[in-house]
Every structure is written in C-alpha cells, then in structure tokens.
Image (cartoon, rainbow, N blue to C red; front, side):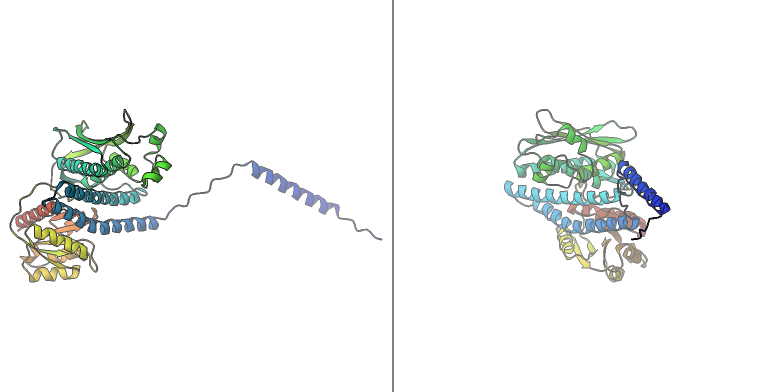
Length: 420
C-alpha cells in the first residue's frame, strides 16, 4: 500500500500560523478591555430636545397661569382659615410646577451651552415674602412649623433673573418640606458682601432626615439622588439641585449644604444681583408690587388656548377692563384697525403667524391704531428680546398674575403715551 507523505514546507507554514494565533490571543488577553465610546448626540438632536422642552414649558405655563390667577382671586375672597390653607396649597403646587418647567429647560440647554440669564428689574423683598408664604403654605399642609426671617437690610429693587431664582428657591423649600416628617422648616434671607454686586443669601434649613457626608458629595450631580431608598420613598428625579448649583454659579454665587445640629439639613444659596438702572421689565412670577386699579380699558387678547382665554377674561374683568379675544395672529392687525383698543395682549406662540410677526403688522398700521400699547406674553423668557424689537411696549412671562398684568397694562400705556 503506497503511503502519501505531507510536504515538510507546508507543515512548517501551518505550525508558524498556529503559533502566531496563540501569541495574538495571549496578548489580547493581557490587554485591558477598552471602554466603549459613549455615543455623542448630534447637535440636531440636542436642538430638537431643547425645542421640545421649550414648547412644553410654554404650554404647561398656560394652565398654570389659570391656577395661580384663580388662587390669587380666591385669596381676596372671604375665606375661613381652612379654605385659605387649601388655596395656599394649590398656589404653592402651581408655583413649584412653574419652577420645574424652568429647571427642565435649563437642564436641556446646559448640555451644550450655558443658559443666558435675564436682567430684569424686580422687587427682591416681595420675592422673599412670596417664597416665605410658599414655604409656610407647604409646611402647614403637612403639619409642620415654619419660620421666615427677612433681614431689614435687604434691598428692595434689584436687577437679575427672578424667574430662575424663584425656581431655585422653590426647589429648596420643596425638598425641605418633603424630607421632613415632623418638626420645622426655616427660611432666612439676608444681604452678604459681594464685590460689585448686591449679594443675597437664602438659607433653608429643616429638622428632617438629614444627610451623611457621602450623600452630600453626590448631591449636586445631574439625575443623582443622595440615597436610592430615600428617593424611592419620597420621589423626585434628582435634577433640581444640579440646576440650582448651575444657576448659583452663573449668578456669581454658589450653594452649600451642611448637617444641621440636632438633625436635619441646611442649604445656603448665595447669588449676586445688580443695582437698579435702565428700563424696567415687568416680571409676573417674581413677586408683584401693589397696584391701584385705574381707568377701564378695552383690551384685545390674541390667545388661541381656550383655557387661557377664560383665565385672562377673569383677570381682566376683575381688574375692571373689557376684553375681546381672537385666536390667530393673522387677524390681529385687521381687528386693531377696526376697533378702538387701548391695549393688546399678544401671545408669542400662535397657529399661523407667530406673535412677533403679528406685532410687526400692528406697528405697520397708520396712526393712531399702529401706536396701540402692546404687551407680549410667553412662557419662554427668550421671546422677550424679539418681542420688544418687533414693537412690544412690555413683556410678561407666564404664569401671569393679576397684579403683574395690571402693572404691565399701566406701564405699556405710559410708554405708548410717551412715544406719541
């Protein structure tokens, strides 16, 4: 039987290839496993998320305007103590939702750039009082004691971003009440030294469950909560404190947290505000100055949301004004030209042409119609610049309160009169 022998050259070649494979496997085993690269979101995806959240913020503030407005109107009614506490609870919840809308939009923007702070004239003392009232209302609803201390040395009028400042403070007092089962919560507001700025310190303390040093280190990370078991018990997304810290630093300050002697937690938020100067922008959720109703006005409101119409009609009627409503921006200029209106409330987000273009069309009308007082209204603060550039005399951010609307109408009428 003939035997077939293998070629020595082929055998050596296969042996070398086998050895190379074994060496390669050993080297690969020694190498540390490479970390998978995180997928980067495209700029387009970031823009879509930001736009979606901005639309959400605008839409959610329309019903919040109604809740807050009706709460304000009810508060002026003849209520007993229990009913007044219910109203305060409703108002505090709506204010917190408005703050969350602001914080979520800021969180979306922070992934690609720092958000732009507003520079608005507002009453700091009124803001502090309103935050104190919010704290007292939430504490009373849970059966807790509350204490609010506002320094007599606190300045009255300042310039800054009251919308985001209030949202940050609402987050702090909400946490204080939420994590306190029994005992008390306290708010202290006082001036602090800050070079070239009006420094303000807000201290929120509670007698609640407290935090360990390890939990404090994790506290300001986005979407991170100090304790998972506590989070499952009390709820929350862990988003607020990260945004609060970002805001504090953007305003030239910071936020710190410490353990409270005897149990509980102390949060101290410091911010730097500017002294008052320049034109005034009226803020609806920053604490409203007192007002005296003036003459009855004919007001045209361009608002497509049926709920928003009902609310604005209730506010304007309560203020002694007569309101007319239309739902599309295209009809605004034509209706102004036909009627004798004293002011126009222009929502920025409308079907068809937006509020900016509708303002331009009104300003293009011949006198006296083209000079009517116009107030821009939006749930997005970034709409203000374009609104004023198009010709608005004043601007309101939702949720709109009765007093802020009254002040805005007065201011817009004054500016309109000065321009003519």
